[in-house]
Image 1 (cartoon, rainbow, N blue to C red):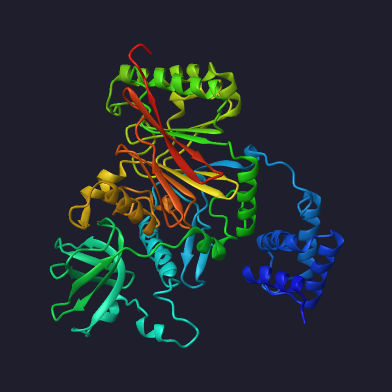
Image 2 (spheres, helix red, strand yellow):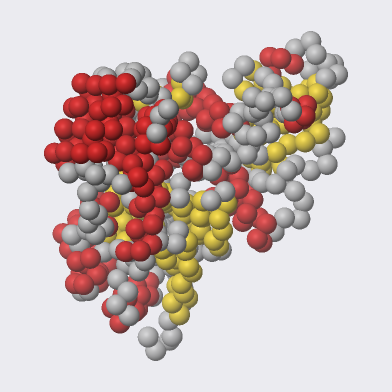
Length: 539
């Protein structure tokens, strides 16, 4: 009978869809013995080997001993096989990922998994890429729904099978008037202006008159919804219930697709993530990221507020590892402005560079990230937006060694954590385009509905492209699957923070006026705190 170590080795490789022959199994056991790997470290060491094996271009489902030896030799050279732990170096595990640099992974119906796109991505896109972007959204949501306990049949006979919910396609409605169906599709208006639900097989008109109220969330044109109703003789679905698709937590998605490098910066396993999380709590508990939004550089008090924030950091020896500044960096649009307005825009960035450079301790240790807002001068108004034009940021680049000008949205990868940063007036745009919402929803419920809708949709802008233009070849950069660790929805709406399905979401509020709001994020706790700087008149 196989011992515990053998079972662990087989289980780890099986997770990556690989099977082991006797020779490969014996070789791995010899490696563990050679390096005196303790029983509680076997999982980590074998996970390291399995992950590297899976990355090999010629890796077969049946593990090849030759490839395994090659992987082991490479890991030996890197010194990566469970030796004594060194202290964590946060800078070597910190990445800032531009939307235009993220690899494109699309859903393959044939293989039932993600495939990396081999075609070159363009800003113009094509008719096919526009269709593919929407289909990818549908298939990604659908594959996670079909794993949900309410939709996935058990392998064992039980009474629960009687209550199993079955998704149908629009083509299955034909000729079946009087029957009740549950559909998953995108809410949209047809050419006649009638509300429909569309899936990959077609569309059907909806009648919402018999529905009391929709489920929790914001239902916009362009979002995917679960719609239940009765199909009538007039080829209309009389809706009785409508809900958001259930959200799949990060751990579940990562347990299935953990070997896929969605960000292009190297993938980590769940085991590595948990070990990093433990060590971050132990070694980096005092490490923080600052997030500011609407840093109006043309407002006379903004630099005063930033100066006070930097002074507080120095006085309290509280130097953040990252300071993210989101636009707008101007209080009014200057896209159509004159030469003087544009010159002033650049001068404001130059003044900011001089201010930051006057704090050498912060300049030396802190990464500064600049994310453009809707009013900033970038290469495009469609999402994702390009970084602020380099013409305006040359002084910042020369004064600050660790400065990053990113797209909107962008991502921050820190060990196993993924933080999405998005500057958009999401609440106002979603509310302007709602098809349905529970009545009398305000305050905390409204904020929760916004967060729930965006995470349930696995997308930052669950809207049609005529409402929010999106570059179709880069739609994957707006995707929220697998669910990130944290999402910053920098919005001119009031500040808030909440955690939904294990994902921490917050809005830092505006760094404007005489009361400057911002948020601090602690990777060790995976939570945020609100900060406010009050500037007295004499300041």
